[in-house]
Structures are given as structure tokens and as C-alpha cells.
Length: 166
Image (cartoon, rainbow, N blue to C red):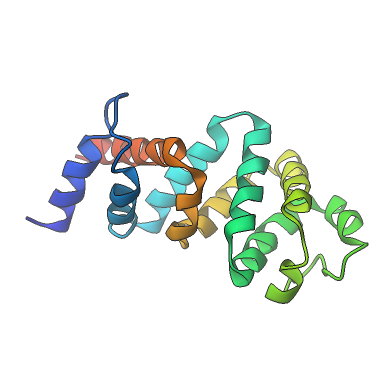
């Protein structure tokens, strides 16, 4: 059985509204390692856009809190350009440079500040969702922190794409 056959069987389970949630974390690992990064990014973006606007910033904040320093800096590199000029004002009381963030500087920011930055970034430039989703697709272990329901939605979206390409 090929890898595509294996993930096809997994994804078929997520074509229905009653997708299994008990194995979603394991299934996500298998699918994330098998699909192209763009496919995974699309599934993540779908989830980030599917809830209320505050859901995006809350999710980004929670993922930031779970991220390692390098991942935090990478997330901020995606957020800050979209949140300018607000980001410069919000960061003025910190040692964080709004144009290039080091992992050490990223560690200094609280998830609450990142939530505010994400709110401003999404309002100013909705495509920031796509850029962050591409980043998250490169760090699927981090994505698992979004919770079972959100992972199930990611899997459902990837399943829809897979079905459309059959």
C-alpha cells in the first residue's frame, strides 16, 4: 500500500461531519508528513478564518505561547509587517525591534501583546492569515496545539481537497 493510499484512507474518514476525533492527532501527524506544505497551509488557513475574528488572534496567541524562541521570532516576522505602524507603537516599550526580531527578543513578548498584534495585523492585512498558515505548515507539531476540534477541521479541509483531486 502506497503512502497516498494510506493517507487517502485516513482522509476519507474526515469527509463526513462525524469525523473521528479520538485519533485526529495521530492522523494529523501522518497526513502532515505526506501532503505538500501548501495543502497543509490551506487547511490551517481555513481553520484560522472559520471562526470569529477574535478566534484568529486568540489562536495565534496560544500558538505563540507554546512555540520555542525561534518559532516565536518566525511568527513575529510574519505578523509585524502586517501590523505596522501599530506594531512600532505597541513595541516601543520593549526591546523588540519591529523590523527584525531575534529569538531572544521574541521571548520578551507576552502572548497578550501578540494577540493584540494579531488583531491589528488581520484588520490591516487579511493575507497575514495565509503567511502565518504557511509558517505553521512548516511546524506541524506546533499546530497540534490548536486543539482536537480545530485539527479535525484541518483534516476535513485537506480531505475535501483530496476528494476533489481524485
